[in-house]
Image (cartoon, rainbow, N blue to C red; front, side, top):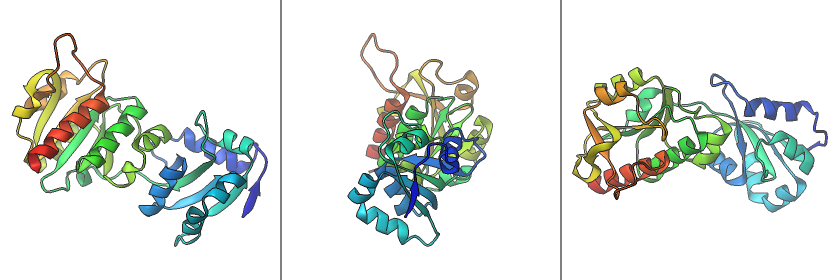
Length: 261
């Protein structure tokens, strides 16, 4: 295993660039044992993995799995200060990786029978977006779409928030117009999540469905609501008019799963 001792090393610079990645780049940064394990299990190609000597000693099975990959991966034994310089996380886990992963094609998110797709419209918080992906994976959605000005699905914060689910459920990036067109092409009913919508338990979520979710502050743009087939809401007690967008996604998807089962 190679040693990495300098914070100014070119390898460290590659991690920093990946943390600031442009959406068009295929290189993504993964921080944490579980996220790296999920990437390996999903067959995501890893190019570089760095970890402290102590972490490598704690993870002999992961080390064996990395060495068994079909594609070569560079493994580095790094000091804790090097890990701190390479990782964007405030409290680094002691292991990080660079991998090659890009969002899926838009049509892949509607590939289920029947499709149940979530589109986050202008949801800019990557942690929230990652949590939506995680709920989609857990509750059987066929895909998630980052629509409009939503967070980059391949950003390190979104991937960390998804906790590996981005490698198991198709996640795409598209403009709102393209998203709506793709939904109509498969006969999906488009529901816009709004505070004044029809209670979710009264909405039929058993057929092809696209759920549109907006940001907490502004909600969905008028154009998205106007283009939808109906409005959907989670009943709440008086005085509460909104929920965190990731919580909203989980509750809507739970009801869809209940209806479909």
